[in-house]
Image 1 (cartoon, rainbow, N blue to C red):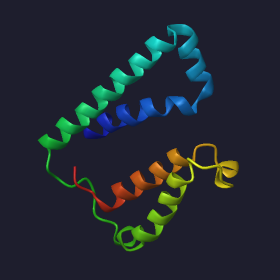
Image 2: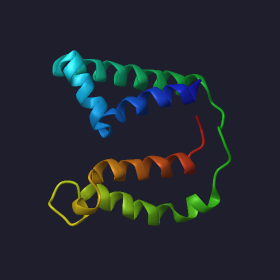
Image 3: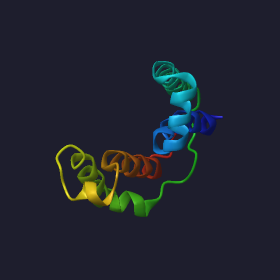
Length: 117
């Protein structure tokens, strides 16, 4: 059940990456209604994650010791992508959304070293 809540929250945040789906939703519902629905589904997913986290207290999986060992090195890349999103850098020429990539790297690393629900 907890995984479904996470899929709802992160699934809605993947819509901006699919330009056809995003433009279809904007033309179908209008920009303001689309933003409102996006915000409501995001908030509902976040609240479901928070209350789901509070209700369960078990570990989903075993801690990956290699991820824990290399986490500080991977965080360097995550923060590099995160910081390079604001100024004009060469990283923006390589990746379209460096901030999203940095947050995705951080989130993946966070999930590998923190298995508690």
